[in-house]
Length: 125
Picture 1: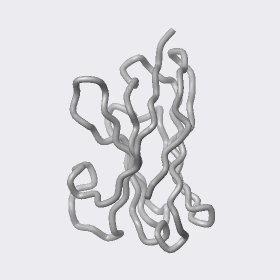
Picture 2 (picture 1 turned 90 degrees about the horizontal axis):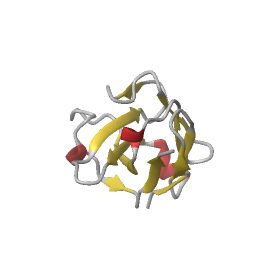
Picture 3 (picture 1 turned 135 degrees about the vertical axis):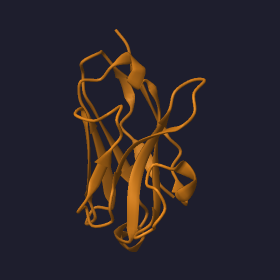
Picture 4 (picture 1 turned 90 degrees about the vertical axis):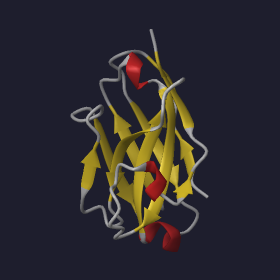
């Protein structure tokens, strides 16, 4: 239901922009969206989230100051702009969503209902 794209190979210090497409306007307009990532041999971790209307965002500690999240509900897309990439950012990045207004913690993976297939980001020289 969610299609993530934009991953690839980038050198340390470089940038990438990930995108996540939702299937319909109705689907995307009422959902809080987030990105998680999973590095080889590690647990999936929270990266960033944005509310259904784009009014609030939260960036995880590992990405703070380098990544930004945004959304365009008219185009049913969410973006993750990643700058100053480091080798430790190498992971599969997953787009996810949950119903807006959920009282559950935004950083907890199990609170999200819908997941995309993931896109691989490799940071290496």
